[in-house]
Image (cartoon, rainbow, N blue to C red; front, side, top):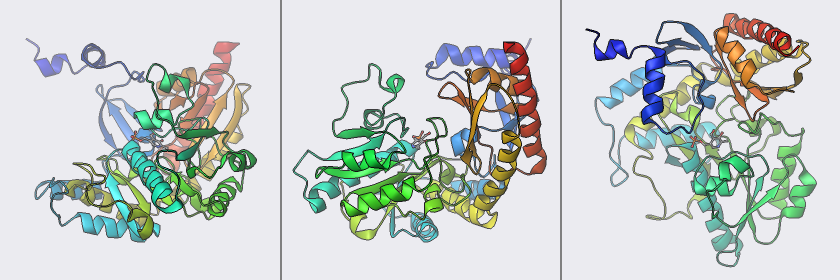
Length: 410
Ligand SMILES: Cc1ncc(COP(=O)(O)O)c(C=O)c1O
């Protein structure tokens, strides 16, 4: 007789089990991962793959980083959860580390990225009424076409993507849409009712869209002149991914509210936060906003160690160097299907003139996991700890897979 676990320890059984009992709100690649380390994944049959998805930047430190794992294990044996009804001995240390590293006065911890985005939207509206003097319930927040800020009702109300919104209305009022990358359009959209502009400095989910040079600083200067808060959503681009601590740093922009998530959890745990100056964050008073799990001691111990590792292992600098290397290889590839290679650091998008899913599957057959986003774009975003040999594997794999794509579409 075959034991239950052995019987199910095969990819297709597990996929079937998931399909039977889980909602079908994703279309994953056909790989069932059971183990990972650094930049590598192993499937249930023991095959090894290079991870170029990195859980959409949440795995910047690589899988199962030994120091972060040790912090998790140690903390989990002492204290995991208190709620914010009492103080704990980890939250202060995490807050101190996060604010000193980023140059902000105060942080408000949450769990998922979208909860931090929600926190930023609430803080901006409150500032609009209490400080700017916008009449009650009329505040407007400017967002960009093609953005991605998550999946809650607020985030999809702020989205221009039809699929994310379809049949989920009614939507929250108060969002004003402008094209991304057009400073004049942004200027025209600002009114006396505008409390904030929310920007991803590079649109990740939207297909790795990099705005023109100088755009982020122009938008932030415009916000300052017109008494509007500049909110940077760096959930995906932050903490080293683009070759600087934050993507806004490339243009020396210090946002009024900075939203961080994903890599803050070191690849182990959902940890997010907003950061701001004291007067602004002070507009949240006791009881106004919160989360049962936000700022829990386990999350704080993990995130503080993740920040230490990021600094000590120089992850932003490594992302910059590896990104330059990979860019050079990818740009040198001549394929009639490649329209553009773009991005910054280790957030790279390869735009094709055909759906990118076929390229993603061709890479998978070559031991590389990279996923399509927005139909025609393949996103390549490996952990920032990647070194030369796996970088070369991506370049070779892409050359091969593009060649296979050309022959299949001939
Ligand atoms: C820029 C940005 N903001 C917010 C989010 C939402 O984060 P989460 O999925 O952790 O809620 C994402 C997720 O991809 C993101 O890329």
